[in-house]
Image 1 (cartoon, rainbow, N blue to C red):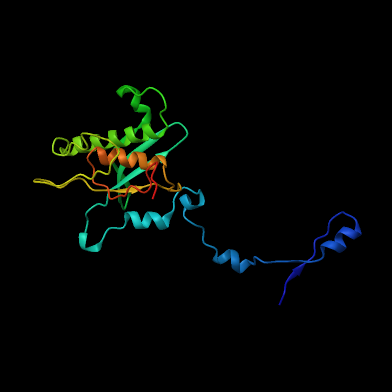
Image 2: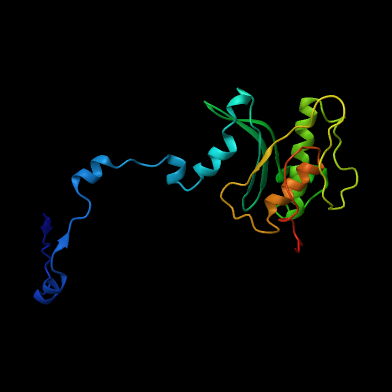
Length: 202
């Protein structure tokens, strides 16, 4: 049965005649069964489908952490972090920010593509130094923009992680790929292709 309700307004009879009856679409049963979404989904900050695919580890790898290079670009900063997730929350191993770059000689343009590259490079070198791998994996000695992947020789394997771009559109030439290139040239093993780097022409 249709439950109909009529609204009374202090307006002219012609307006009331044109309005008619309004059907109630959301009943009490709807509101009782409604389940709110996760807070960061309601705030529009996290894509949980993408996060699940980035975070969930293979069962046969047991408790091995799955590392992510998290890159976020704000209006005034570029943030690069090496993260892995635990039940209690995400854990940060290493971080670098573009507002640190003036200490290394880059004074201006702290949010452009070059700053993103330098921030990714700084984050990679900090992480490898923390893990004691900075001497074995020195990265790209001659960064000329060509495709580069760190190679495993003797000893410990290179540090491997995947790129986490968040909610941005992964267009060709996006700044997050500049940070990716910086981290790869810094000595991290991050699976990628050259298709999204600036100037790529198939």
